[in-house]
Length: 94
Image (cartoon, rainbow, N blue to C red; front, side):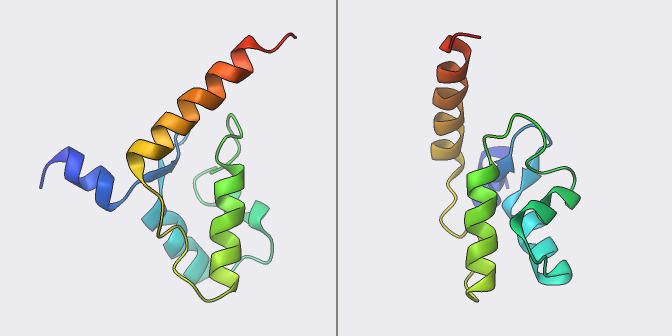
């Protein structure tokens, strides 16, 4: 299996701390967090730049609904969306 195949099968959700969808899904199953912010206990997810917080909230909601959390996360789309978000933040006045 190539590195590219691995990233598509287990996409990164939190780029700051390199937390994958599978790791977060396992955390959700084992820990059953009450609120989405508790996902930060999974290797610091969501505590860096903040871009992934909405995705973490969506994964938490899916988990609570009995669905597969983050099943629609796509590595390439995720990376592109984060780049756009970071570019927009850099251009904001301080």
